[in-house]
Image (cartoon, one colour):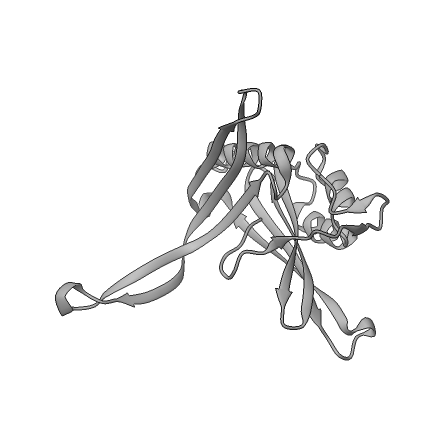
Amino acid sequence: MFRISGAWRTTDPRPEEGPHGGRAGSDWSPYGRFQDAARSYFLHADVALDAVSGVLGRRRVRGFTLERVVDLTENGASVWQEAAVCDGRRLILWHSEEVTDGEAPGGTVLDSSVQVLPLGAVGHVGMRTMVGRDENGVRTNRGVYLVVATGTLQELSAAPGEDGGVATARFRPEAFRFSKSLDDGGPGQIARLIDFGRLLGRLVPAGRR
């Protein structure tokens, strides 16, 4: 999953029927095409595909990662869906969240947003992989954490100086964090996120085709 700030969300334990057959929330990792993966995984695949394709245009998808999670709030469970798509020049980030709207039929609406980052704006790609062994002693990846940071300042805070000295400023750049584990996504999605991180590492900072 990716985030800029806020609490980590937890994987939805109760997949529901998707609009294109199969169970939404099932494993998307076998699908090589973004469209097929989104249709098999998202509850609102049509919204995701419309938002991403509107930005993508005729460019080819080079890599992607998906997540569908549940955010537990005081008002109950809210479905959060997200996609990160790379076309070789840009990182396209889409997410949606169900929000309360007392005037809407059913009492909720889908808040869908898309953000586009030129790969030239990415200043850091960091990936940490948790490597272990299975019951047969074969090496296996048990989890992966990917961080993509830009040069944009997200937060500025004051830090106290040593021994009561002059306070200093602490800068935190905008960063997007992705993760997969055996419990959240399984081996297939771990492998796909590793591939996605390697792709970004090869393309940054040039953003070449």
